[in-house]
Image: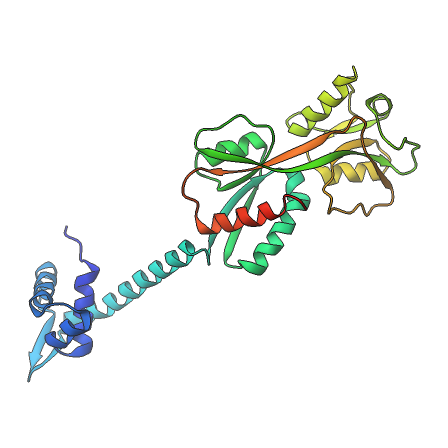
Length: 294
């Protein structure tokens, strides 16, 4: 079955509005024979006359009036669709799908989301809590647009992975404990520990930090939610090793934070697909990039 083109419908509406083929041709910047051809093709497709001529004035037939009404809605919908897409192309509206770990979501992302809300309110940010490997996999298959991932990562075909932040890993210790000014593996291994679970890059980092001193501690509990870990530290359940962003205050007076000796760093990167980047995604990347030194 042949489709009815929007150009033919636009011609029909113009004739209905102007009352003549000639005026419709001038309005649409078409040659008069082209206007006649459009109507002939529509009538052939419909199988009935769409226009009637009376005293030099052209008006829709009964069937034509029904089609004109439907055509107006179709043309308006098409214009709205194009306008919506144009707004996304220009970055005024759109969607960006972002994957990150709970650690990044807890403190870094809210800062970015606040800036985006103020400057780009038409962009819908959809966030998924994922491991770094899950984030890279979903970026590669096109179901994410931006990822915050732990570094280092091996190169992934079709993806760009750039270093973003380097934040110190600190010891979070119950305030009523007596602890040194700088926490060493030797001191910490003798304490009850709350550690990130083995699926996280932070778990591997801290395991390597202990192993460099010849230690292989067993945790009292393993979690993958940093705020829950801090709550357990505040309750005196154990000490933890967690990254600390410079702009994140330590409000809970039941916790003290100490630097490590030797120092340990959590490195994060920003990942996205190579090639063309949609404006909405680029706005998100720009705001995140501005947080690299925060």
